[in-house]
Image 1 (cartoon, rainbow, N blue to C red):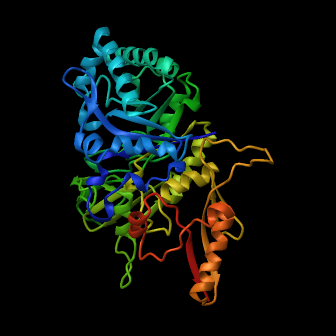
Image 2 (image 1 turned 90 degrees about the vertical axis):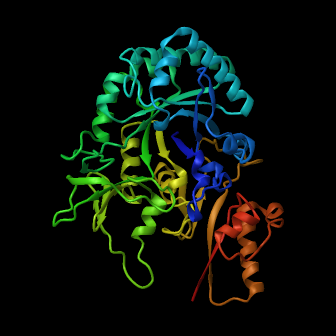
Image 3 (image 1 turned 135 degrees about the horizontal axis):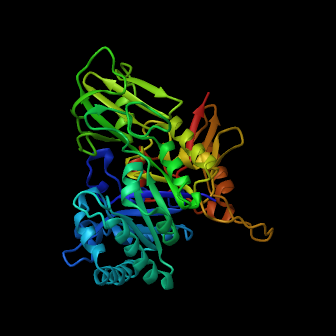
Length: 458
C-alpha cells in the first residue's frame, strides 16, 4: 500500500574507493519506484543525457537501471530531469510558451520510450525563483498538463519532486491543480536549515533555529485539498555539515563560518553521505569515536560535532519515527534521496542499506521471523496469491546461526539446508557455495547476488 521511491545519483559510480556505487548493487525489490537522476535540457528545449559516457555510451546507466525490471516486474523506473545544478531559468523559458511545452512533451515521450523508462520525474528547482518569473506558477501547471496529455495514451508515469519549504510552495506551486495531473509528488522534506547558522536540516517538529519543519509542511499540504496519498515523505541519506567556531555550547543555532569539510566519497563541502557519517562516528579498535552525538528524539533528528565540524543528519531511530509519522498522516509513501549514499556496503550496522531497510521494516515490507535470525522481504507493490497450487514465493535474506565448530563438510551441509528452505529444492541445488573474503568479491563474482550470511557461535 505504500510507495518506496528510491533516487539514484547517476554520478555516484565516479566516487572513489568504498563510496563508488554500481547499479548492480541495487536490490530491485527494495523499491517500488527507482528514479535515475538527472537528465537535463538542451539548448533547443528538449530532454537529453547530461553525461553520455555514463548514461548511454560506455557505462550504460540508462540500460542497466531499466534492466532491473527483469528481476522485479513490479518495479517502475523513472528518469528525473532537472536538479539544483540545472538551475531554474531555462525551465522557466521552456514553460513560457505552448509551442515549446508541446514540443518538449512529444520529444520527452520519444526519449522515454527509446530507453525503456516508465515515466518522468520533474525536478525543477524552483518555479518563480533563481531566474524564473512569477508566471512560472501557472506555467508549470500548463507544462505538466502538456506532458500528461502526451503520456496518458502510453501509460507513462508523471511525477514531480518539490521543495518542503512552505514559503517556496506558496509562491511556486499550484498544489490542487498539480495533484490532479501528477501520479504522485515527492516532497523534499529536508533543507530546512540555514547557511549562516548550524541548524537542523530535517526536524519533524518545531525548532527555534529553523524556518520550517516537516510537520508545518504537511499541515500546509493538508489544507490544499490534495489527497494526502499523492505525497511521498522525503528522507535524505545526506548530512548537512558546517564549519563553526568551537565553543562551550555546540547546540543548534550557533554561528557557522562556512560549510563543513568534504568527505572522501562525495567530496562536496557542506554535505556528507550517511556512509561517510557512520564511518566517522564508528569507534575503531583502539579508541572510541571522538564525535559528540546528540539524538533529539522528540523532533526526530540528530546532530554531532567534533572540534570545528558540526553536522545534522538522520539515523535509524529518527527515520523510524518519520516513517511512522508519514503513515499516521496517511501519506502515500516514502522517498529517499539517495540510496547510493546509504551504507550500501553494510560497514556500520551489519546490514547493507540500513536506512532503506529501516523504511521497509516500519512500512511492513520486511518482517522479523523465527528467533530473530532471519529477515523475510516481500516485494513492495507485489500481491500475494492465495492459490494453494502455485503460491508466490517470499524470498529471504537469512543469517544462518551454526553452533559449535563444525567441519567444512558439516558447515556446507547446514548452508545447503538453508538455501533449499529459501529457494526450494530445485533452485537450491543449483546454488554455488563459495567462501569469499569480502562483499566486494561477491559483487565481482556474482553481481546482484543475494548472500546468506553465516554466524558461528560457541
